[in-house]
Amino acid sequence: MTRLNTNQWLALVLALLAAAYLAMAWQIPVFPLPRPVDSDLFPKVLGAALLLLSVFLFFEKPTPIAGADEIDQDATQGPLLLTPWARVVITALAIAAYALLLVPLGFVLASTLLCVGLTAYYGYQRHGVNLATSLGVVLVLYLTMTRVMDVYLPTGVLPF
Image: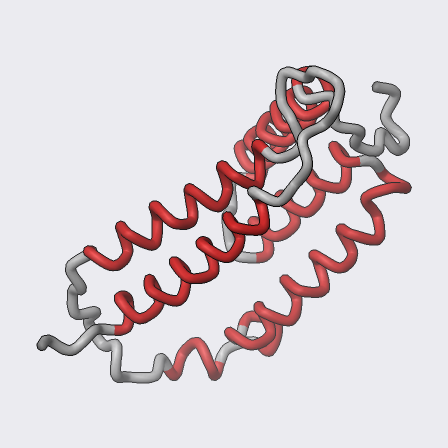
């Protein structure tokens, strides 16, 4: 018997989580009125996608990463706000701020601010492209969710 690598162990854990998630998704009751998209569709699609991706991860051939055993001293010695742990903390704080500002600012504005802010923080320099892409993706998501799927998303300060 061969030994499992890290990706395969992670794939097994994700597959178990996906199977449990799918089992719970099948327990969601069907909405009594006919709708084009019912409340159980998105969780089922999400669980199936996670299960499929975990299968892909299990069979992915691992490649050695150059310098994987070495610690990058430049990353740990740089400015405090750009160290790896600071990035994790700042990202978590940005998501918490997003959750707090979602209702007052609205989905479109809060989501665009989160995308633009985090990509700029992580070093993307083309701010016009960043803004256009973030706003485009957020607007497509907003219009799909509100117009097609009849999901209420907070409008906030923008008159939608």
